[in-house]
Length: 152
Image (cartoon, rainbow, N blue to C red; front, side, top):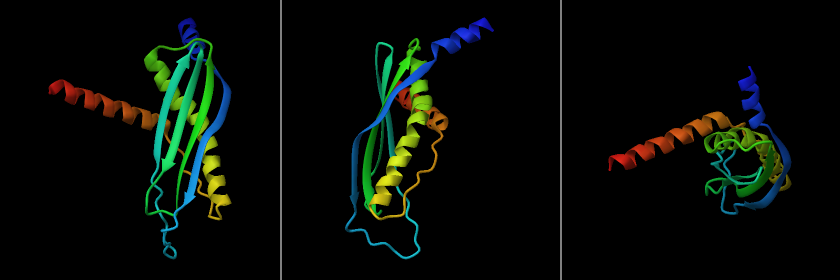
């Protein structure tokens, strides 16, 4: 029990700040909507981070630049998280890609909904993201790529 409490203590962090640091939105003037047709919005999500002392700066980028949709956008949010004790590299990566990204994502959802509403469109409410599955999938993909390189 004491060991579990120690591990929990090393993973505690606080949110210092979450803010939008970049935003781009443009209506697609060449897009011709078809009546009663729903359009798929292709999304690209990127998560990166830098650590400095006990602070970790997480960057979450979400963009959509498909030509067959009514608009394109790119938003970038920054989250500053302060750890009591910085975890080991692999554990920190997991916390950033799952916990920190999950904390930051609602801010991006709100921003995109507001941007689309202000453009006179029906607000785009992004579906929730399973960051655990996304992280595990990314990890598995990297593992396979690494194995391919080793075989060559």
